[in-house]
Amino acid sequence: MQLDLNGKTALITGGSKGIGLACAQSLLSEGARVVICSRSQENIDTALAKLPGAIGFAADLISENEALSLVDKIEADVGALDILVNCAGAARRTPPQDLSPAHWRAAMDAKYFSYINVIDPVVKRMAARRAGVIVNVIGGGGKVASPIHLPGGAANAALMLATVGLANAYAASGLRIVGINPGNTETERVTEGLRAEAALHGISEQAALEKLVQRIPLGRMATPEEIANVVTFLSSSKASYVTGVVIGMDGALNPIVV
Image (cartoon, rainbow, N blue to C red; front, side):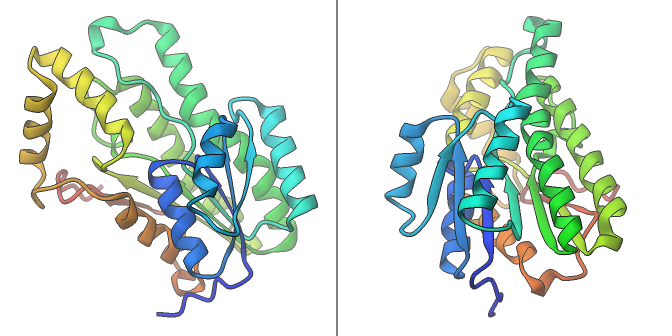
């Protein structure tokens, strides 16, 4: 299938690792001009070695000012953004007995505001141009509560609402805004989750991994590339009537409709 992404300019936040890196590779393969960002210049440099032709900028998206400066720089140096894929930020997984209000605030900064701080300037500029796609890679913890992921799940739930709400608000301006809720995916973030799960149940990390995989009806975790394939499709004109929804990708772990 030809996705007609040649020459489109795409920003992937959190594009130096995991799902974000896979999204950058997939969009590049379809001819898009790809820009990645990460807080770490070292991570960007490592990722760019795997992304021939891509560009990278370091920015801490928890800062509203840094996020705005990033968008300004990309649009001045590379071109107007056609696609924004948000993968940056992850809330720390913590057993419930160890939570404090600080954990909840940190989760909102790490996940919710790291997305919103970029979405806000981008969505307004896309609306002025009457074209653009935003894909938010969120997480199933916003729909199904996990004891070790409550602050992060709350941030994800807020992002789900922001995603569908902004899609509704900007549809008449020619924008599409979509969310994806990956389940457990083979990335470095899984290790942190397994550590918290093992601590909660008093088992080894290996036992926690086996328990996790056994619960997934497909019998395995997703690969980053599988998530990226869907992101790339949603970013294309072939998904021109898909907006205002959050798509679950958890291997049928949570067979829910609403």
